[in-house]
Amino acid sequence: MPSLNDASSAVWAPPVGVAAPRNLCTDCGISRTADAHRCGRACQFIQPDYSGMEAQVHGRPRDESRPDELYFGPFKRMAQARLNPALAGAQWTGIATRIAEKLLQTGAVDAVLTMAPDSQDKWKPVPVLVTKPEGMSQVRGMRMGYAPLLSLLEPALAKGYKRLAVIGIPCQVYALRALEKELGFERLYVIGTPCSDNTTTEKFHTFLALLSEAPETITYLEFRADYHVELRFVDGRKKEIPFLQLPISQLPPDFFPMTCRTCVDYTNVLADITVGYMAGQGEQWLIIRNERGEELAALLGEELVTSEPGSAGKRAGAVKGFLKNTELAAGGLPLRRMPNFMRHIVGWLMPRVGPRGLEFARARVEMKAVETILHLRRAHKARMKWIVPTHVWRLVAPYGITPRDGEQKDST
Ligand SMILES: Cc1cc2nc3c(=O)[nH]c(=O)nc-3n(C[C@H](O)[C@H](O)[C@H](O)COP(=O)(O)OP(=O)(O)OC[C@H]3O[C@@H](n4cnc5c(N)ncnc54)[C@H](O)[C@@H]3O)c2cc1C
Ligand code: SF4
Ligand code: SF4
Image 1 (cartoon, rainbow, N blue to C red):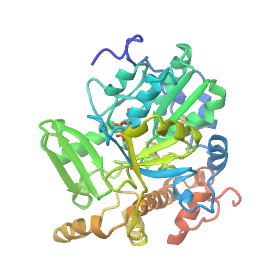
Image 2: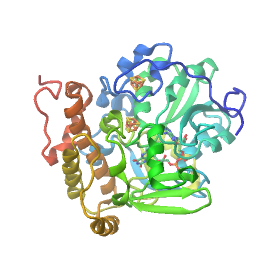
Image 3: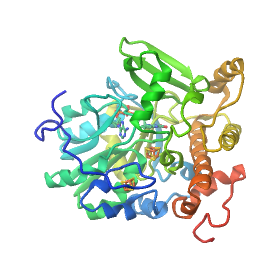
Image 4: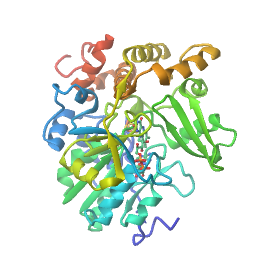
Protein backbone atom coordinates (compact mmCIF):
# COMPACT_ATOMS: atom_id res chain seq x y z
CA MET A 1 0.00 0.00 0.00
CA PRO A 2 1.40 3.49 -0.83
CA SER A 3 2.28 5.79 2.10
CA LEU A 4 -0.80 7.20 3.79
CA ASN A 5 1.18 10.20 5.00
CA ASP A 6 1.62 11.68 1.54
CA ALA A 7 -1.01 14.37 0.87
CA SER A 8 -0.69 13.91 -2.89
CA SER A 9 -1.58 10.20 -2.83
CA ALA A 10 -5.14 8.93 -3.31
CA VAL A 11 -5.40 8.12 0.42
CA TRP A 12 -4.04 10.61 2.93
CA ALA A 13 -3.70 10.12 6.69
CA PRO A 14 -2.58 13.43 8.18
CA PRO A 15 -1.28 13.26 11.76
CA VAL A 16 -3.96 13.56 14.45
CA GLY A 17 -3.83 15.66 17.62
CA VAL A 18 -3.84 14.38 21.19
CA ALA A 19 -7.13 13.23 22.74
CA ALA A 20 -8.47 15.15 25.74
CA PRO A 21 -9.38 12.84 28.65
CA ARG A 22 -13.10 12.11 28.62
CA ASN A 23 -15.37 9.71 30.44
CA LEU A 24 -17.83 7.73 28.23
CA CYS A 25 -16.03 8.56 25.01
CA THR A 26 -15.36 6.66 21.79
CA ASP A 27 -12.69 9.14 20.70
CA CYS A 28 -14.64 10.29 17.63
CA GLY A 29 -11.91 12.88 17.13
CA ILE A 30 -13.62 16.08 18.30
CA SER A 31 -11.55 16.26 21.50
CA ARG A 32 -8.44 16.27 19.29
CA THR A 33 -9.52 19.34 17.28
CA ALA A 34 -8.56 22.97 17.94
CA ASP A 35 -11.57 23.44 20.20
CA ALA A 36 -11.91 20.35 22.39
CA HIS A 37 -14.70 22.03 24.36
CA ARG A 38 -17.03 21.36 21.44
CA CYS A 39 -17.52 17.86 22.88
CA GLY A 40 -20.04 19.45 25.25
CA ARG A 41 -22.44 20.22 22.41
CA ALA A 42 -21.41 17.49 19.99
CA CYS A 43 -21.36 14.33 22.06
CA GLN A 44 -24.12 11.75 22.12
CA PHE A 45 -22.90 10.74 25.59
CA ILE A 46 -23.25 14.21 27.11
CA GLN A 47 -26.47 15.97 26.16
CA PRO A 48 -27.84 14.72 22.87
CA ASP A 49 -31.03 15.97 21.25
CA TYR A 50 -32.08 13.29 18.81
CA SER A 51 -35.46 14.68 17.78
CA GLY A 52 -33.98 18.16 17.27
CA MET A 53 -31.10 16.75 15.23
CA GLU A 54 -33.45 14.55 13.17
CA ALA A 55 -35.50 17.64 12.36
CA GLN A 56 -32.36 19.57 11.44
CA VAL A 57 -31.01 16.85 9.15
CA HIS A 58 -34.15 15.29 7.67
CA GLY A 59 -36.64 18.12 8.04
CA ARG A 60 -38.68 16.22 10.64
CA PRO A 61 -38.24 13.95 13.65
CA ARG A 62 -39.30 10.30 13.51
CA ASP A 63 -42.99 9.99 12.67
CA GLU A 64 -45.02 7.92 15.13
CA SER A 65 -47.64 7.08 12.49
CA ARG A 66 -44.96 5.08 10.62
CA PRO A 67 -44.22 2.35 13.19
CA ASP A 68 -40.77 1.37 11.86
CA GLU A 69 -39.47 4.91 12.41
CA LEU A 70 -39.62 4.25 16.15
CA TYR A 71 -36.96 1.58 15.60
CA PHE A 72 -34.93 2.87 12.68
CA GLY A 73 -35.37 6.69 12.72
CA PRO A 74 -36.76 8.87 9.90
CA PHE A 75 -36.61 7.37 6.42
CA LYS A 76 -38.11 7.81 2.96
CA ARG A 77 -37.80 4.15 2.05
CA MET A 78 -35.93 0.97 2.92
CA ALA A 79 -34.62 -1.74 0.60
CA GLN A 80 -32.96 -5.11 0.60
CA ALA A 81 -30.06 -4.53 -1.75
CA ARG A 82 -26.84 -5.77 -3.30
CA LEU A 83 -24.25 -4.34 -5.60
CA ASN A 84 -23.87 -6.25 -8.86
CA PRO A 85 -21.06 -6.99 -9.44
CA ALA A 86 -19.97 -7.08 -5.80
CA LEU A 87 -16.64 -5.45 -4.94
CA ALA A 88 -13.91 -7.86 -3.87
CA GLY A 89 -12.65 -7.14 -0.36
CA ALA A 90 -15.80 -5.29 0.70
CA GLN A 91 -17.54 -6.20 3.94
CA TRP A 92 -20.75 -7.21 2.11
CA THR A 93 -21.14 -6.28 -1.56
CA GLY A 94 -19.44 -2.87 -1.28
CA ILE A 95 -22.37 -0.46 -1.53
CA ALA A 96 -20.74 2.00 0.89
CA THR A 97 -17.47 2.02 -1.06
CA ARG A 98 -19.12 2.29 -4.46
CA ILE A 99 -21.26 5.29 -3.47
CA ALA A 100 -18.14 7.12 -2.28
CA GLU A 101 -16.20 6.07 -5.36
CA LYS A 102 -18.98 7.50 -7.57
CA LEU A 103 -18.99 10.76 -5.61
CA LEU A 104 -15.28 11.14 -6.33
CA GLN A 105 -15.63 10.04 -9.96
CA THR A 106 -18.41 12.53 -10.70
CA GLY A 107 -16.57 15.34 -8.90
CA ALA A 108 -19.43 15.82 -6.44
CA VAL A 109 -16.93 15.81 -3.55
CA ASP A 110 -13.29 16.78 -3.06
CA ALA A 111 -12.62 14.01 -0.55
CA VAL A 112 -14.13 11.09 1.37
CA LEU A 113 -13.42 10.83 5.09
CA THR A 114 -13.33 7.21 6.22
CA MET A 115 -11.14 4.49 7.80
CA ALA A 116 -8.24 2.60 6.27
CA PRO A 117 -6.58 -0.46 7.83
CA ASP A 118 -3.45 0.29 9.85
CA SER A 119 -0.30 -0.84 8.03
CA GLN A 120 0.80 -2.99 11.02
CA ASP A 121 -2.63 -4.28 12.10
CA LYS A 122 -5.32 -4.84 9.45
CA TRP A 123 -8.06 -4.83 12.12
CA LYS A 124 -7.17 -1.37 13.42
CA PRO A 125 -9.02 1.60 11.84
CA VAL A 126 -6.99 4.65 10.80
CA PRO A 127 -8.84 7.82 9.73
CA VAL A 128 -8.01 8.91 6.18
CA LEU A 129 -9.08 11.33 3.46
CA VAL A 130 -9.55 9.63 0.10
CA THR A 131 -9.21 12.09 -2.77
CA LYS A 132 -9.21 9.85 -5.85
CA PRO A 133 -11.74 7.15 -6.78
CA GLU A 134 -9.03 4.46 -7.02
CA GLY A 135 -8.15 5.13 -3.36
CA MET A 136 -11.49 3.68 -2.23
CA SER A 137 -10.25 0.15 -2.96
CA GLN A 138 -7.79 0.55 -0.06
CA VAL A 139 -10.47 1.21 2.55
CA ARG A 140 -13.08 -1.47 1.81
CA GLY A 141 -14.12 -3.93 4.49
CA MET A 142 -14.64 -3.65 8.24
CA ARG A 143 -12.09 -2.86 10.90
CA MET A 144 -13.02 -3.51 14.51
CA GLY A 145 -12.68 -0.69 16.97
CA TYR A 146 -13.06 3.07 16.88
CA ALA A 147 -10.61 5.76 15.84
CA PRO A 148 -10.70 9.58 15.70
CA LEU A 149 -12.40 10.02 12.33
CA LEU A 150 -13.51 13.61 12.95
CA SER A 151 -10.01 14.81 13.86
CA LEU A 152 -9.47 15.03 10.08
CA LEU A 153 -12.23 17.61 9.53
CA GLU A 154 -9.83 20.48 10.18
CA PRO A 155 -7.03 19.13 7.94
CA ALA A 156 -9.68 18.60 5.21
CA LEU A 157 -10.85 22.21 5.43
CA ALA A 158 -7.28 23.50 5.60
CA LYS A 159 -6.53 21.66 2.37
CA GLY A 160 -9.55 23.29 0.72
CA TYR A 161 -11.74 20.17 0.68
CA LYS A 162 -15.06 21.94 1.19
CA ARG A 163 -17.28 19.29 -0.40
CA LEU A 164 -16.94 16.20 1.71
CA ALA A 165 -18.45 12.72 2.04
CA VAL A 166 -18.11 10.94 5.36
CA ILE A 167 -18.53 7.21 5.97
CA GLY A 168 -19.00 6.71 9.68
CA ILE A 169 -20.54 4.82 12.58
CA PRO A 170 -23.33 6.40 14.64
CA CYS A 171 -21.30 7.99 17.45
CA GLN A 172 -19.11 9.70 14.86
CA VAL A 173 -22.06 10.80 12.75
CA TYR A 174 -23.90 12.30 15.75
CA ALA A 175 -20.96 14.60 16.56
CA LEU A 176 -20.46 15.46 12.89
CA ARG A 177 -24.10 16.50 12.50
CA ALA A 178 -24.09 18.46 15.76
CA LEU A 179 -21.22 20.59 14.45
CA GLU A 180 -22.14 20.54 10.76
CA LYS A 181 -23.40 24.15 10.59
CA GLU A 182 -20.40 25.68 12.29
CA LEU A 183 -17.82 23.62 10.39
CA GLY A 184 -18.50 25.48 7.14
CA PHE A 185 -18.41 22.71 4.54
CA GLU A 186 -20.12 23.69 1.27
CA ARG A 187 -21.58 20.22 0.85
CA LEU A 188 -21.66 17.20 3.12
CA TYR A 189 -22.82 13.67 2.25
CA VAL A 190 -23.15 11.23 5.13
CA ILE A 191 -23.03 7.50 4.44
CA GLY A 192 -23.66 5.74 7.74
CA THR A 193 -23.36 2.13 8.79
CA PRO A 194 -25.18 0.64 11.77
CA CYS A 195 -22.95 -0.20 14.70
CA SER A 196 -23.27 -2.22 17.86
CA ASP A 197 -21.08 -4.32 20.13
CA ASN A 198 -17.92 -2.55 19.09
CA THR A 199 -14.83 -2.73 21.26
CA THR A 200 -11.23 -1.61 21.12
CA THR A 201 -9.06 -3.26 18.48
CA GLU A 202 -6.82 -4.60 21.27
CA LYS A 203 -9.74 -6.40 22.93
CA PHE A 204 -10.99 -7.64 19.57
CA HIS A 205 -7.70 -9.50 19.13
CA THR A 206 -8.50 -11.47 22.32
CA PHE A 207 -11.75 -12.58 20.68
CA LEU A 208 -9.99 -13.60 17.44
CA ALA A 209 -7.52 -15.66 19.47
CA LEU A 210 -10.43 -17.65 20.92
CA LEU A 211 -11.86 -18.38 17.48
CA SER A 212 -8.77 -19.84 15.83
CA GLU A 213 -5.40 -21.28 16.72
CA ALA A 214 -3.94 -19.02 14.02
CA PRO A 215 -5.87 -15.76 14.51
CA GLU A 216 -3.43 -13.89 12.27
CA THR A 217 -4.82 -15.89 9.33
CA ILE A 218 -8.37 -14.54 9.80
CA THR A 219 -9.10 -11.95 7.12
CA TYR A 220 -12.83 -11.36 7.59
CA LEU A 221 -15.39 -11.56 10.38
CA GLU A 222 -19.09 -10.72 10.34
CA PHE A 223 -21.98 -11.28 12.74
CA ARG A 224 -24.60 -12.31 10.19
CA ALA A 225 -28.36 -11.93 10.49
CA ASP A 226 -28.78 -15.73 10.27
CA TYR A 227 -27.29 -16.04 13.78
CA HIS A 228 -23.87 -17.15 12.58
CA VAL A 229 -20.47 -15.52 12.68
CA GLU A 230 -18.69 -15.91 9.36
CA LEU A 231 -14.90 -16.12 9.34
CA ARG A 232 -12.68 -16.12 6.27
CA PHE A 233 -9.02 -17.09 6.23
CA VAL A 234 -5.98 -16.20 4.11
CA ASP A 235 -6.10 -19.59 2.35
CA GLY A 236 -9.68 -18.96 1.16
CA ARG A 237 -11.36 -21.17 3.78
CA LYS A 238 -14.64 -20.06 5.36
CA LYS A 239 -16.02 -21.01 8.74
CA GLU A 240 -19.51 -20.36 10.12
CA ILE A 241 -20.04 -20.47 13.89
CA PRO A 242 -23.57 -20.32 15.37
CA PHE A 243 -23.84 -17.41 17.85
CA LEU A 244 -24.66 -19.81 20.67
CA GLN A 245 -21.38 -21.62 20.18
CA LEU A 246 -19.19 -18.53 20.39
CA PRO A 247 -16.67 -18.59 23.26
CA ILE A 248 -18.33 -15.58 24.94
CA SER A 249 -17.92 -17.08 28.42
CA GLN A 250 -14.14 -16.84 28.02
CA LEU A 251 -14.17 -13.10 27.37
CA PRO A 252 -13.49 -10.62 30.20
CA PRO A 253 -16.65 -8.95 31.61
CA ASP A 254 -15.45 -5.55 30.35
CA PHE A 255 -14.90 -6.82 26.81
CA PHE A 256 -17.47 -4.34 25.50
CA PRO A 257 -16.80 -0.79 26.76
CA MET A 258 -19.61 1.03 28.56
CA THR A 259 -20.03 3.37 25.56
CA CYS A 260 -20.86 0.52 23.22
CA ARG A 261 -23.24 -1.09 25.70
CA THR A 262 -25.19 2.11 26.18
CA CYS A 263 -25.20 4.06 22.92
CA VAL A 264 -28.74 4.54 21.69
CA ASP A 265 -28.36 4.92 17.94
CA TYR A 266 -27.93 1.48 16.39
CA THR A 267 -29.05 2.40 12.85
CA ASN A 268 -27.25 5.73 12.36
CA VAL A 269 -30.39 7.87 12.22
CA LEU A 270 -28.58 11.07 11.20
CA ALA A 271 -26.95 9.63 8.06
CA ASP A 272 -28.36 10.49 4.63
CA ILE A 273 -28.27 6.80 3.82
CA THR A 274 -27.61 3.89 6.19
CA VAL A 275 -25.90 0.87 4.64
CA GLY A 276 -26.22 -2.22 6.83
CA TYR A 277 -27.29 -5.83 6.63
CA MET A 278 -29.57 -6.56 9.56
CA ALA A 279 -32.89 -6.66 7.67
CA GLY A 280 -31.27 -7.88 4.46
CA GLN A 281 -31.86 -11.65 4.89
CA GLY A 282 -28.42 -12.44 3.49
CA GLU A 283 -28.15 -9.29 1.38
CA GLN A 284 -27.58 -5.67 2.41
CA TRP A 285 -30.16 -3.33 3.90
CA LEU A 286 -30.50 0.29 2.87
CA ILE A 287 -32.32 2.99 4.84
CA ILE A 288 -32.67 5.98 2.54
CA ARG A 289 -33.49 8.81 4.88
CA ASN A 290 -33.75 12.00 2.80
CA GLU A 291 -33.35 13.48 -0.69
CA ARG A 292 -29.58 13.45 -0.39
CA GLY A 293 -29.77 9.74 0.44
CA GLU A 294 -31.86 9.21 -2.73
CA GLU A 295 -29.19 11.08 -4.68
CA LEU A 296 -26.52 8.73 -3.27
CA ALA A 297 -28.49 5.56 -4.09
CA ALA A 298 -29.19 6.87 -7.61
CA LEU A 299 -25.44 7.18 -8.26
CA LEU A 300 -25.26 3.39 -8.40
CA GLY A 301 -27.78 3.09 -11.27
CA GLU A 302 -28.30 -0.47 -12.45
CA GLU A 303 -25.41 -1.74 -10.33
CA LEU A 304 -27.78 -1.55 -7.38
CA VAL A 305 -30.24 -4.46 -7.29
CA THR A 306 -33.03 -3.89 -4.80
CA SER A 307 -36.17 -5.60 -3.50
CA GLU A 308 -38.68 -5.00 -0.71
CA PRO A 309 -37.29 -6.02 2.68
CA GLY A 310 -39.11 -9.03 4.14
CA SER A 311 -40.13 -9.72 7.73
CA ALA A 312 -40.86 -13.01 9.49
CA GLY A 313 -41.04 -14.57 12.96
CA LYS A 314 -41.80 -12.86 16.25
CA ARG A 315 -39.21 -10.97 18.23
CA ALA A 316 -40.79 -10.69 21.69
CA GLY A 317 -39.51 -14.05 23.03
CA ALA A 318 -35.95 -13.38 21.86
CA VAL A 319 -35.92 -9.89 23.39
CA LYS A 320 -37.37 -11.16 26.70
CA GLY A 321 -34.68 -13.87 26.81
CA PHE A 322 -32.00 -11.25 26.18
CA LEU A 323 -33.41 -9.01 28.93
CA LYS A 324 -33.35 -11.88 31.41
CA ASN A 325 -29.80 -12.87 30.53
CA THR A 326 -28.57 -9.28 30.73
CA GLU A 327 -30.15 -8.91 34.19
CA LEU A 328 -28.59 -12.18 35.36
CA ALA A 329 -25.17 -11.16 34.04
CA ALA A 330 -25.27 -8.09 36.34
CA GLY A 331 -22.86 -6.06 34.25
CA GLY A 332 -20.93 -8.98 32.72
CA LEU A 333 -21.66 -10.52 29.32
CA PRO A 334 -25.15 -11.98 28.83
CA LEU A 335 -24.44 -15.71 28.60
CA ARG A 336 -27.08 -18.24 27.79
CA ARG A 337 -26.90 -21.01 30.32
CA MET A 338 -27.73 -24.21 28.48
CA PRO A 339 -26.10 -27.59 28.02
CA ASN A 340 -23.97 -28.09 24.91
CA PHE A 341 -26.35 -30.46 23.12
CA MET A 342 -29.14 -27.85 23.51
CA ARG A 343 -26.90 -25.16 22.06
CA HIS A 344 -26.60 -27.17 18.84
CA ILE A 345 -30.37 -27.66 18.56
CA VAL A 346 -31.22 -24.05 19.35
CA GLY A 347 -28.39 -22.87 17.09
CA TRP A 348 -30.00 -24.86 14.25
CA LEU A 349 -33.51 -23.64 15.04
CA MET A 350 -32.85 -19.90 15.43
CA PRO A 351 -32.23 -19.05 11.75
CA ARG A 352 -35.36 -21.02 10.84
CA VAL A 353 -37.92 -19.85 13.40
CA GLY A 354 -36.33 -16.78 15.02
CA PRO A 355 -37.10 -13.23 13.86
CA ARG A 356 -35.88 -12.57 10.31
CA GLY A 357 -35.62 -9.55 8.01
CA LEU A 358 -37.12 -6.37 9.45
CA GLU A 359 -38.30 -8.31 12.51
CA PHE A 360 -34.68 -9.30 13.23
CA ALA A 361 -33.60 -5.65 12.91
CA ARG A 362 -36.41 -4.54 15.26
CA ALA A 363 -35.36 -7.24 17.74
CA ARG A 364 -31.74 -6.05 17.72
CA VAL A 365 -32.76 -2.41 18.18
CA GLU A 366 -34.98 -3.38 21.13
CA MET A 367 -32.21 -5.50 22.67
CA LYS A 368 -29.81 -2.57 22.38
CA ALA A 369 -32.35 -0.29 24.06
CA VAL A 370 -32.82 -2.80 26.91
CA GLU A 371 -29.08 -3.09 27.33
CA THR A 372 -28.68 0.70 27.40
CA ILE A 373 -31.15 1.13 30.25
CA LEU A 374 -29.87 -1.78 32.35
CA HIS A 375 -26.20 -0.79 32.09
CA LEU A 376 -26.78 2.93 32.64
CA ARG A 377 -28.94 2.18 35.69
CA ARG A 378 -26.12 0.18 37.17
CA ALA A 379 -23.17 2.36 36.20
CA HIS A 380 -24.26 5.90 35.25
CA LYS A 381 -27.70 6.51 36.73
CA ALA A 382 -27.18 10.27 37.06
CA ARG A 383 -26.52 10.59 33.33
CA MET A 384 -29.69 8.78 32.25
CA LYS A 385 -31.93 11.82 32.14
CA TRP A 386 -29.50 13.51 29.76
CA ILE A 387 -28.62 10.71 27.39
CA VAL A 388 -31.67 8.42 27.09
CA PRO A 389 -34.10 9.88 24.53
CA THR A 390 -37.86 9.43 24.91
CA HIS A 391 -38.08 6.99 22.00
CA VAL A 392 -35.77 4.54 23.80
CA TRP A 393 -38.19 4.42 26.73
CA ARG A 394 -40.94 3.61 24.24
CA LEU A 395 -38.88 0.74 22.82
CA VAL A 396 -38.40 -0.92 26.21
CA ALA A 397 -41.91 -0.28 27.60
CA PRO A 398 -43.39 -3.54 26.16
CA TYR A 399 -40.84 -5.44 28.27
CA GLY A 400 -41.92 -3.86 31.54
CA ILE A 401 -39.06 -1.34 31.76
CA THR A 402 -40.26 2.14 32.67
CA PRO A 403 -38.43 5.25 33.86
CA ARG A 404 -37.73 5.48 37.57
CA ASP A 405 -37.36 8.67 39.60
CA GLY A 406 -34.61 10.89 38.25
CA GLU A 407 -34.19 8.95 35.02
CA GLN A 408 -35.99 11.47 32.80
CA LYS A 409 -35.50 15.20 32.43
CA ASP A 410 -38.93 16.14 33.76
CA SER A 411 -38.51 14.01 36.92
CA THR A 412 -35.97 14.42 39.72
C1 LIG B 1 -17.84 -1.84 14.33
C2 LIG B 1 -18.93 -2.08 13.33
C3 LIG B 1 -20.08 -2.76 13.73
C4 LIG B 1 -21.12 -2.96 12.81
N1 LIG B 1 -22.27 -3.59 13.23
C5 LIG B 1 -23.30 -3.74 12.36
C6 LIG B 1 -24.52 -4.33 12.79
O1 LIG B 1 -24.65 -4.74 13.94
N2 LIG B 1 -25.53 -4.41 11.89
C7 LIG B 1 -25.41 -3.97 10.59
O2 LIG B 1 -26.38 -4.08 9.81
N3 LIG B 1 -24.26 -3.44 10.15
C8 LIG B 1 -23.21 -3.30 11.01
N4 LIG B 1 -22.04 -2.74 10.57
C9 LIG B 1 -21.91 -2.35 9.15
C10 LIG B 1 -21.52 -3.53 8.25
O3 LIG B 1 -20.47 -4.28 8.82
C11 LIG B 1 -21.00 -3.05 6.87
O4 LIG B 1 -19.95 -2.14 7.07
C12 LIG B 1 -22.05 -2.36 6.08
O5 LIG B 1 -23.10 -3.25 5.87
C13 LIG B 1 -21.49 -1.87 4.75
O6 LIG B 1 -21.11 -2.95 3.93
P1 LIG B 1 -20.43 -2.66 2.53
O7 LIG B 1 -20.03 -3.93 1.87
O8 LIG B 1 -21.31 -1.72 1.78
O9 LIG B 1 -19.13 -1.89 3.06
P2 LIG B 1 -17.72 -1.59 2.35
O10 LIG B 1 -17.96 -1.14 0.93
O11 LIG B 1 -16.79 -2.70 2.61
O12 LIG B 1 -17.26 -0.27 3.16
C14 LIG B 1 -17.15 -0.28 4.56
C15 LIG B 1 -16.80 1.12 5.00
O13 LIG B 1 -16.80 1.17 6.42
C16 LIG B 1 -15.60 1.79 6.87
N5 LIG B 1 -15.20 1.20 8.16
C17 LIG B 1 -14.63 -0.02 8.33
N6 LIG B 1 -14.38 -0.23 9.62
C18 LIG B 1 -14.79 0.87 10.28
C19 LIG B 1 -14.77 1.24 11.66
N7 LIG B 1 -14.30 0.43 12.60
N8 LIG B 1 -15.27 2.44 11.99
C20 LIG B 1 -15.77 3.29 11.05
N9 LIG B 1 -15.81 2.98 9.72
C21 LIG B 1 -15.31 1.79 9.35
C22 LIG B 1 -14.57 1.48 5.79
O14 LIG B 1 -13.52 2.38 5.81
C23 LIG B 1 -15.42 1.56 4.52
O15 LIG B 1 -15.46 2.86 4.03
C24 LIG B 1 -20.98 -2.51 11.48
C25 LIG B 1 -19.82 -1.83 11.08
C26 LIG B 1 -18.81 -1.60 12.00
C27 LIG B 1 -17.58 -0.84 11.55
S1 SF4 C 1 -17.61 14.21 21.15
FE1 SF4 C 1 -16.25 12.52 20.55
S2 SF4 C 1 -14.26 12.99 21.50
FE2 SF4 C 1 -15.81 14.26 22.52
S3 SF4 C 1 -16.40 13.08 24.33
FE3 SF4 C 1 -17.84 12.56 22.66
S4 SF4 C 1 -16.98 10.73 21.67
FE4 SF4 C 1 -15.36 11.68 22.92
S1 SF4 D 1 -21.41 0.61 19.50
FE1 SF4 D 1 -22.14 2.75 19.61
S2 SF4 D 1 -20.65 3.85 20.88
FE2 SF4 D 1 -19.70 1.90 20.24
S3 SF4 D 1 -18.54 2.41 18.43
FE3 SF4 D 1 -20.56 1.69 17.73
S4 SF4 D 1 -21.83 3.56 17.56
FE4 SF4 D 1 -20.01 4.09 18.75
